[in-house]
Length: 236
Image (cartoon, rainbow, N blue to C red):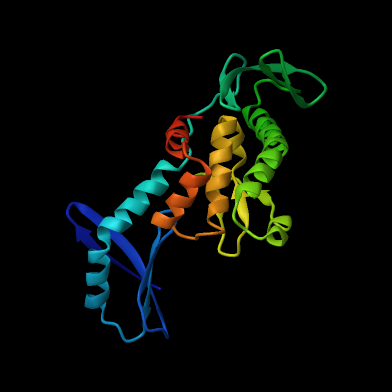
């Protein structure tokens, strides 16, 4: 694929072009910020750039939408007293030197038992694994609840599930083949925000793109999604 760019005001839009045997030109904006133009083989580059320029406002809006939907993280030291999020609330860590290796949520604390309380990578990994376990546990019932709201055939719903995937720039994703991927770090947010992200991704099974029909469906199923989306925009 070839890379090109145009200027729209002060914004530079960089995009790749893939030529195929087809009659029409399409533009896709991906969650990671990549922009792809699929064009008929005989289309001149000037025509393609003109089309991208005409769609520039829409492209920028899509990029802004994805940017707002990205998780933000802050550097962590993984020491006792440091606060970490779980289900939308902050809890303090207790790092305890011990022969056993486990993480326990108890008495308003996240207790991490480890051989060496100064070994940051080991403590970080233990906490990440604990979040992953909790994510699988908490997401399941919410996924089922959201799935019941979706206007899909019951046979299709019966075969749907989610997978956990660490994604530095996304809370969730719906792949082209209909797989729902959820960031384990989503378990750090509130239950309402978890439901919003899951419902958002499931809506893509009905309407793949972020267009007016998609947001109309999302609003019908979750009228307060805009407020929940704003709550996701904080550091974890």
